[in-house]
Image (cartoon, rainbow, N blue to C red):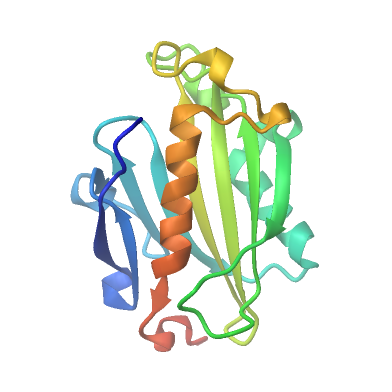
Length: 193
């Protein structure tokens, strides 16, 4: 049985938000520039990433908005991206009744990735959206899991049969821990100018 990842409490957006993230994930802003509305953490022991975006609220019904954000992430591969599951999500430390939704999708490697070293066979995407209507904000959390030949066992992964394999099982744990610990400490982060 794989060893459970340990988690560290992390300050996001200057401490306005806190959450527990895997201890093997490093803050990408320490090595390259990241937009102010985004936090990016990359697994030092693999290829997975966790990206948290604070975006303008998409004025569409909830699952349409979630699909809109997914299309924005996968860009030119939107037509080849397959959504396997969608559902409601619960963030333990957000105000009661805060709407949140999640989906699991797979996408081919991005056009810019094709032909490069370590090109993934596909990327598993665990996408979660928190809807903050009063703040006119959608918070998007994407756990991206590239599946690169030699790094996973293809026979263990079959989304159609809910077989996720080791990499996606770990990502599902990371998402669950994030939903349990994600807390907004400073709501002024969302003040509209």
